[in-house]
Image (spheres, helix red, strand yellow):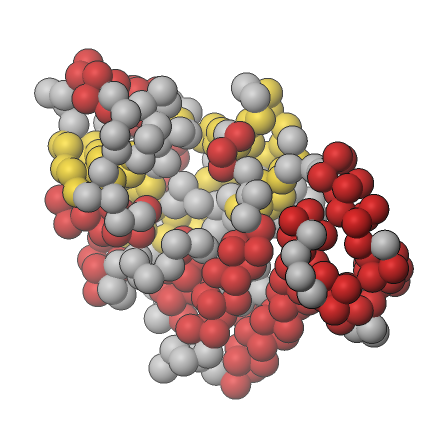
Length: 336
Protein backbone atom coordinates (compact mmCIF):
# COMPACT_ATOMS: atom_id res chain seq x y z
CA UNK A 1 0.00 0.00 0.00
CA UNK A 2 1.53 3.29 -1.13
CA UNK A 3 0.82 6.09 1.31
CA UNK A 4 1.44 9.84 1.23
CA UNK A 5 1.11 11.74 4.50
CA UNK A 6 2.97 14.37 6.50
CA UNK A 7 5.31 12.99 9.17
CA UNK A 8 3.66 12.58 12.59
CA UNK A 9 4.07 15.53 14.92
CA UNK A 10 4.98 13.23 17.84
CA UNK A 11 4.93 9.62 19.04
CA UNK A 12 1.99 7.59 17.77
CA UNK A 13 -0.30 5.58 20.01
CA UNK A 14 0.53 1.88 19.84
CA UNK A 15 -2.15 -0.79 19.66
CA UNK A 16 -4.94 1.49 18.46
CA UNK A 17 -7.93 -0.57 17.35
CA UNK A 18 -9.13 -0.27 13.77
CA UNK A 19 -11.69 2.54 13.43
CA UNK A 20 -15.17 2.09 12.00
CA UNK A 21 -16.38 3.78 8.84
CA UNK A 22 -19.86 5.11 8.12
CA UNK A 23 -20.37 5.66 4.40
CA UNK A 24 -22.40 8.79 3.62
CA UNK A 25 -24.27 8.89 0.30
CA UNK A 26 -26.22 12.00 -0.66
CA UNK A 27 -28.75 11.53 -3.45
CA UNK A 28 -30.63 14.03 -5.59
CA UNK A 29 -32.17 12.99 -8.92
CA UNK A 30 -29.74 10.07 -9.32
CA UNK A 31 -32.07 7.07 -9.27
CA UNK A 32 -30.24 5.62 -12.28
CA UNK A 33 -26.93 5.57 -10.43
CA UNK A 34 -27.44 5.38 -6.67
CA UNK A 35 -27.95 1.61 -6.66
CA UNK A 36 -24.42 1.07 -7.96
CA UNK A 37 -23.01 3.38 -5.28
CA UNK A 38 -24.87 1.60 -2.47
CA UNK A 39 -23.91 -1.84 -3.79
CA UNK A 40 -20.24 -0.85 -3.87
CA UNK A 41 -20.39 0.40 -0.28
CA UNK A 42 -22.08 -2.81 0.90
CA UNK A 43 -19.64 -5.11 -0.89
CA UNK A 44 -16.42 -3.89 0.72
CA UNK A 45 -13.88 -6.50 1.83
CA UNK A 46 -13.86 -4.63 5.15
CA UNK A 47 -17.56 -4.00 5.78
CA UNK A 48 -18.75 -0.51 6.56
CA UNK A 49 -20.09 0.16 10.04
CA UNK A 50 -23.19 1.46 8.25
CA UNK A 51 -24.27 3.03 4.98
CA UNK A 52 -26.32 6.19 5.42
CA UNK A 53 -28.22 7.53 2.41
CA UNK A 54 -29.71 11.02 2.55
CA UNK A 55 -32.40 11.66 -0.05
CA UNK A 56 -32.10 15.40 -0.66
CA UNK A 57 -35.66 15.91 -1.88
CA UNK A 58 -35.47 13.77 -5.03
CA UNK A 59 -38.52 13.54 -7.26
CA UNK A 60 -37.34 10.59 -9.35
CA UNK A 61 -37.76 6.90 -8.45
CA UNK A 62 -35.22 6.75 -5.66
CA UNK A 63 -37.55 4.45 -3.72
CA UNK A 64 -37.33 1.86 -6.45
CA UNK A 65 -33.57 2.27 -6.79
CA UNK A 66 -33.02 1.71 -3.06
CA UNK A 67 -35.62 -1.03 -2.59
CA UNK A 68 -33.12 -3.93 -2.96
CA UNK A 69 -30.97 -2.45 -0.16
CA UNK A 70 -33.66 -1.11 2.16
CA UNK A 71 -32.85 -3.52 5.02
CA UNK A 72 -29.10 -2.86 4.77
CA UNK A 73 -28.96 0.94 4.83
CA UNK A 74 -29.99 3.86 7.00
CA UNK A 75 -32.23 6.13 4.91
CA UNK A 76 -32.95 9.72 5.91
CA UNK A 77 -34.89 12.30 3.93
CA UNK A 78 -35.10 16.06 3.72
CA UNK A 79 -36.37 18.76 1.41
CA UNK A 80 -33.86 19.74 -1.24
CA UNK A 81 -31.26 21.95 0.42
CA UNK A 82 -28.06 21.05 -1.41
CA UNK A 83 -25.19 18.64 -0.96
CA UNK A 84 -23.65 20.33 2.11
CA UNK A 85 -26.94 20.17 4.00
CA UNK A 86 -27.55 16.57 2.91
CA UNK A 87 -24.10 15.54 4.13
CA UNK A 88 -24.72 17.20 7.48
CA UNK A 89 -28.02 15.36 7.78
CA UNK A 90 -26.35 12.05 6.95
CA UNK A 91 -23.51 12.79 9.38
CA UNK A 92 -26.00 13.46 12.18
CA UNK A 93 -27.50 10.00 11.59
CA UNK A 94 -24.13 8.21 11.49
CA UNK A 95 -22.14 6.75 14.36
CA UNK A 96 -18.86 5.47 12.86
CA UNK A 97 -15.47 6.81 13.86
CA UNK A 98 -14.92 8.07 10.32
CA UNK A 99 -17.47 9.48 7.87
CA UNK A 100 -16.59 8.35 4.35
CA UNK A 101 -18.09 10.35 1.47
CA UNK A 102 -19.50 8.51 -1.52
CA UNK A 103 -21.35 10.55 -4.14
CA UNK A 104 -24.43 8.76 -5.45
CA UNK A 105 -23.10 8.51 -9.00
CA UNK A 106 -19.68 7.11 -8.00
CA UNK A 107 -18.49 3.76 -6.65
CA UNK A 108 -15.90 2.39 -4.28
CA UNK A 109 -13.65 -0.44 -5.43
CA UNK A 110 -13.91 -3.44 -3.05
CA UNK A 111 -10.75 -2.77 -1.00
CA UNK A 112 -11.23 0.96 -0.42
CA UNK A 113 -12.47 0.87 3.18
CA UNK A 114 -9.89 -1.79 4.05
CA UNK A 115 -7.11 0.44 2.76
CA UNK A 116 -8.45 3.50 4.58
CA UNK A 117 -8.75 1.40 7.75
CA UNK A 118 -5.12 0.28 7.51
CA UNK A 119 -3.97 3.85 7.00
CA UNK A 120 -6.04 5.07 9.96
CA UNK A 121 -4.64 2.29 12.17
CA UNK A 122 -1.03 2.89 11.16
CA UNK A 123 -1.41 6.68 11.41
CA UNK A 124 -3.96 7.43 14.13
CA UNK A 125 -2.89 11.08 14.03
CA UNK A 126 -4.46 11.59 10.59
CA UNK A 127 -7.93 13.12 10.66
CA UNK A 128 -8.81 13.27 6.96
CA UNK A 129 -8.12 10.34 4.62
CA UNK A 130 -8.51 9.86 0.89
CA UNK A 131 -7.30 7.68 -1.97
CA UNK A 132 -6.52 7.99 -5.63
CA UNK A 133 -9.33 7.18 -8.07
CA UNK A 134 -10.16 6.51 -11.70
CA UNK A 135 -12.03 9.34 -13.44
CA UNK A 136 -14.52 8.12 -16.04
CA UNK A 137 -16.31 9.86 -18.90
CA UNK A 138 -19.04 7.91 -20.72
CA UNK A 139 -17.88 4.73 -19.03
CA UNK A 140 -14.26 5.10 -20.14
CA UNK A 141 -11.38 5.79 -17.74
CA UNK A 142 -9.72 9.02 -18.89
CA UNK A 143 -7.17 9.51 -16.11
CA UNK A 144 -6.47 9.15 -12.42
CA UNK A 145 -7.21 11.89 -9.92
CA UNK A 146 -3.55 12.18 -8.91
CA UNK A 147 -0.94 12.55 -11.65
CA UNK A 148 2.65 13.82 -11.85
CA UNK A 149 1.17 17.27 -12.51
CA UNK A 150 -1.44 17.00 -9.74
CA UNK A 151 0.20 15.43 -6.71
CA UNK A 152 -0.80 14.83 -3.13
CA UNK A 153 1.45 17.04 -0.96
CA UNK A 154 2.95 15.96 2.34
CA UNK A 155 4.77 19.20 3.14
CA UNK A 156 3.05 22.36 4.37
CA UNK A 157 -0.46 21.12 3.65
CA UNK A 158 -1.92 24.23 5.29
CA UNK A 159 -0.49 26.50 2.59
CA UNK A 160 -1.06 24.04 -0.24
CA UNK A 161 -4.78 23.71 0.50
CA UNK A 162 -4.99 27.48 0.00
CA UNK A 163 -3.47 27.09 -3.46
CA UNK A 164 -5.60 24.18 -4.67
CA UNK A 165 -8.00 21.57 -3.38
CA UNK A 166 -5.61 18.61 -3.33
CA UNK A 167 -8.02 16.38 -1.34
CA UNK A 168 -9.79 13.98 -3.69
CA UNK A 169 -13.46 14.46 -2.90
CA UNK A 170 -14.48 10.96 -1.76
CA UNK A 171 -12.62 11.53 1.49
CA UNK A 172 -13.15 10.15 4.98
CA UNK A 173 -13.03 12.45 7.99
CA UNK A 174 -13.10 11.70 11.70
CA UNK A 175 -16.67 12.25 12.79
CA UNK A 176 -15.85 14.07 16.02
CA UNK A 177 -13.39 16.35 14.19
CA UNK A 178 -15.93 17.22 11.51
CA UNK A 179 -18.74 17.91 13.97
CA UNK A 180 -16.49 19.92 16.25
CA UNK A 181 -15.37 21.93 13.23
CA UNK A 182 -18.94 22.78 12.24
CA UNK A 183 -19.66 20.22 9.53
CA UNK A 184 -20.12 21.34 5.95
CA UNK A 185 -20.99 25.01 5.44
CA UNK A 186 -24.49 25.01 3.97
CA UNK A 187 -24.11 28.51 2.55
CA UNK A 188 -21.84 27.04 -0.15
CA UNK A 189 -23.45 25.55 -3.25
CA UNK A 190 -20.11 25.24 -5.04
CA UNK A 191 -16.71 24.19 -3.65
CA UNK A 192 -18.28 23.14 -0.32
CA UNK A 193 -15.80 20.27 0.01
CA UNK A 194 -12.79 22.56 -0.47
CA UNK A 195 -14.16 24.96 2.15
CA UNK A 196 -14.44 22.08 4.62
CA UNK A 197 -10.88 20.85 4.04
CA UNK A 198 -9.46 24.38 4.26
CA UNK A 199 -11.20 24.92 7.58
CA UNK A 200 -10.12 21.58 9.05
CA UNK A 201 -6.51 21.94 7.92
CA UNK A 202 -6.27 25.42 9.40
CA UNK A 203 -7.71 23.90 12.59
CA UNK A 204 -4.73 21.53 12.60
CA UNK A 205 -6.07 18.36 10.94
CA UNK A 206 -3.43 16.49 8.87
CA UNK A 207 -4.50 14.65 5.71
CA UNK A 208 -3.24 11.28 4.45
CA UNK A 209 -3.73 9.48 1.15
CA UNK A 210 -3.54 5.93 -0.12
CA UNK A 211 -2.03 6.64 -3.53
CA UNK A 212 -3.81 3.79 -5.28
CA UNK A 213 -6.98 4.08 -7.41
CA UNK A 214 -9.66 2.67 -5.13
CA UNK A 215 -12.76 4.44 -6.43
CA UNK A 216 -14.42 5.18 -9.73
CA UNK A 217 -15.51 8.81 -10.11
CA UNK A 218 -18.10 9.17 -12.86
CA UNK A 219 -18.02 12.48 -14.74
CA UNK A 220 -21.60 12.74 -16.05
CA UNK A 221 -22.95 15.10 -18.68
CA UNK A 222 -24.85 17.10 -16.08
CA UNK A 223 -21.82 17.28 -13.77
CA UNK A 224 -19.79 19.02 -16.45
CA UNK A 225 -19.09 22.57 -15.37
CA UNK A 226 -21.23 24.51 -17.75
CA UNK A 227 -21.45 27.04 -14.92
CA UNK A 228 -17.70 27.53 -14.53
CA UNK A 229 -18.28 31.13 -13.46
CA UNK A 230 -20.32 30.02 -10.44
CA UNK A 231 -17.63 27.46 -9.58
CA UNK A 232 -14.90 30.11 -9.66
CA UNK A 233 -17.03 32.47 -7.60
CA UNK A 234 -17.47 29.68 -5.05
CA UNK A 235 -13.74 29.00 -4.93
CA UNK A 236 -12.99 32.66 -4.33
CA UNK A 237 -15.61 32.69 -1.58
CA UNK A 238 -13.82 29.74 0.06
CA UNK A 239 -10.56 31.68 0.24
CA UNK A 240 -12.20 34.91 1.36
CA UNK A 241 -13.69 32.95 4.25
CA UNK A 242 -10.29 31.41 4.97
CA UNK A 243 -8.85 34.90 5.43
CA UNK A 244 -11.11 35.27 8.48
CA UNK A 245 -10.04 31.98 10.06
CA UNK A 246 -8.68 32.64 13.58
CA UNK A 247 -5.66 30.35 13.05
CA UNK A 248 -4.49 31.53 9.64
CA UNK A 249 -0.84 32.60 9.68
CA UNK A 250 0.56 35.69 7.91
CA UNK A 251 2.34 33.62 5.27
CA UNK A 252 -0.85 31.63 4.67
CA UNK A 253 -2.85 34.83 4.37
CA UNK A 254 -0.49 35.85 1.56
CA UNK A 255 -0.94 32.49 -0.21
CA UNK A 256 -4.74 32.81 -0.02
CA UNK A 257 -4.66 36.32 -1.45
CA UNK A 258 -2.39 35.22 -4.31
CA UNK A 259 -4.81 32.40 -5.14
CA UNK A 260 -7.77 34.79 -5.01
CA UNK A 261 -5.97 37.04 -7.49
CA UNK A 262 -5.28 34.10 -9.83
CA UNK A 263 -8.85 32.84 -9.65
CA UNK A 264 -10.09 36.39 -10.19
CA UNK A 265 -8.30 36.48 -13.53
CA UNK A 266 -9.84 33.12 -14.47
CA UNK A 267 -13.22 34.48 -13.44
CA UNK A 268 -12.83 37.52 -15.69
CA UNK A 269 -12.10 35.24 -18.63
CA UNK A 270 -15.01 32.96 -17.70
CA UNK A 271 -17.40 35.89 -17.54
CA UNK A 272 -16.15 37.10 -20.91
CA UNK A 273 -16.78 33.68 -22.47
CA UNK A 274 -20.30 33.62 -21.02
CA UNK A 275 -20.97 37.14 -22.30
CA UNK A 276 -19.74 36.19 -25.77
CA UNK A 277 -21.86 33.04 -25.88
CA UNK A 278 -25.02 34.92 -24.89
CA UNK A 279 -24.13 38.19 -26.66
CA UNK A 280 -24.71 40.06 -23.44
CA UNK A 281 -24.71 43.84 -23.16
CA UNK A 282 -21.26 45.12 -22.21
CA UNK A 283 -19.33 42.27 -23.82
CA UNK A 284 -16.84 44.66 -25.47
CA UNK A 285 -16.10 46.22 -22.08
CA UNK A 286 -15.47 42.76 -20.59
CA UNK A 287 -13.16 41.91 -23.47
CA UNK A 288 -11.25 45.16 -23.10
CA UNK A 289 -10.70 44.46 -19.40
CA UNK A 290 -9.11 41.09 -20.15
CA UNK A 291 -7.11 42.41 -23.11
CA UNK A 292 -5.49 45.16 -21.02
CA UNK A 293 -4.61 42.90 -18.09
CA UNK A 294 -0.83 42.63 -18.44
CA UNK A 295 -0.73 39.77 -15.98
CA UNK A 296 -2.88 37.61 -18.26
CA UNK A 297 -1.18 35.20 -20.70
CA UNK A 298 -0.47 36.73 -24.11
CA UNK A 299 -2.69 34.20 -25.89
CA UNK A 300 -5.61 35.10 -23.62
CA UNK A 301 -5.09 38.81 -24.20
CA UNK A 302 -4.98 38.36 -27.98
CA UNK A 303 -8.20 36.36 -27.94
CA UNK A 304 -9.79 39.10 -25.83
CA UNK A 305 -8.70 41.70 -28.41
CA UNK A 306 -10.41 39.64 -31.11
CA UNK A 307 -13.52 39.41 -28.94
CA UNK A 308 -13.56 43.19 -28.44
CA UNK A 309 -13.28 43.77 -32.20
CA UNK A 310 -15.75 41.11 -33.36
CA UNK A 311 -17.74 39.80 -30.39
CA UNK A 312 -20.49 38.28 -32.56
CA UNK A 313 -18.07 36.18 -34.60
CA UNK A 314 -16.10 35.02 -31.57
CA UNK A 315 -19.29 34.15 -29.71
CA UNK A 316 -20.53 32.11 -32.69
CA UNK A 317 -17.27 30.17 -32.82
CA UNK A 318 -17.35 29.54 -29.08
CA UNK A 319 -20.85 28.12 -29.25
CA UNK A 320 -19.95 25.91 -32.21
CA UNK A 321 -16.73 24.40 -30.85
CA UNK A 322 -17.26 24.88 -27.13
CA UNK A 323 -15.47 22.20 -25.12
CA UNK A 324 -17.43 21.08 -22.11
CA UNK A 325 -15.32 20.41 -19.08
CA UNK A 326 -15.64 19.29 -15.50
CA UNK A 327 -13.61 20.90 -12.76
CA UNK A 328 -13.29 19.22 -9.41
CA UNK A 329 -12.13 15.92 -7.83
CA UNK A 330 -9.20 17.48 -6.09
CA UNK A 331 -9.06 20.41 -8.49
CA UNK A 332 -8.53 18.28 -11.57
CA UNK A 333 -10.06 19.16 -14.93
CA UNK A 334 -11.55 16.68 -17.39
CA UNK A 335 -12.76 17.63 -20.85
CA UNK A 336 -15.42 15.66 -22.67
